[in-house]
Image (cartoon, rainbow, N blue to C red; front, side):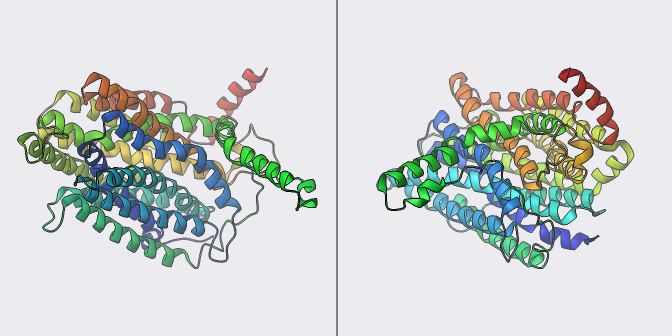
Length: 489
């Protein structure tokens, strides 16, 4: 049994911190940048929604592939490095796209780079969390450091958000504000990647590498295709068969994977999906809400006008609120959450976090004093902390004792960590897709950005209700199993 020091766990999770810094900086600025470049609210929603939509249909496959993949330098690291490279390119695309879109000559190319960079950045920054979390699960299996490890995971995630929001809130003395902050985020992200690679290079190949059959890769090229390699029509037929089964049917396979997941995982998936929809609505649009509602600014106002200055000031002040949100989340998960779990249990701690988030969202709707708003934003960090730590700890607990928790699966069926976290992340992306594609159109039709915060409040209340149905320990299994047996009769 391997035990890890707190410092070692921090270094193992360093890449997660860098991912959150990059995503926080980019998505604090991306909605205002897109609106200033001339995108409509609904078009902005599509750009922000495509990445999670693609992630929803591919993250489970990435998780299963990382369970199956073998390289001499580690089972998960190949995917971590590949997605890190893609994220770095997308950050550069956002930086250059913003610069080009500010001039009439480069507007078209700049808008294209912003749209492409936004989609790819959204996708890669979130999908990369799956192999990072699966690696942590591999390393902590059978260790007494499991809950502490995922508390540190949530803590460095919140720390990354703190650093990211700090980069957006300060006034940079050189260059454009958005470009300077994104450039600093890119450098910090690369340093965090190097820290994680150095921490896991000696561990990645030694833990949790068991061969598993991928349920979604059963389709192979038929032998008859291989026996006539010179027949062009046969090759084309084989290519179309491969494309059909591996690409076109992938959404169906992912939906089936989620629907047929173990009952305990399904219940956690529902609660996690709703809670992440609420958290995403707040994180993406809080600064926009402060700039437009509290400061009465307009994102598409003429350059150097009073409305533009008010909006920019509101976005910066909203960034300070999100910074306080992340600081509170980081402090809570590192200093208080473990004590609350030991005293009151996972269920009470999870529900307390969701209830506090809902209360802060309702308060945000009725209060227009910016200082009070930022205080409520800070306290909402408690809810974000439980959303990023407790579901992951539960999945690790489920996975460690599959025979007990996955009672509705065949005894000989074993699931990988990546597949289980993939199901959880499908809910994460589904929540973001609903916000980006649906709520942006609703808000544009209403002409009121209040809709984003109102949705966050209602969704967090519903997540609180669903949290009552989640399985938190072995003692919940007999009742759940009895209910399951009754439904089968």
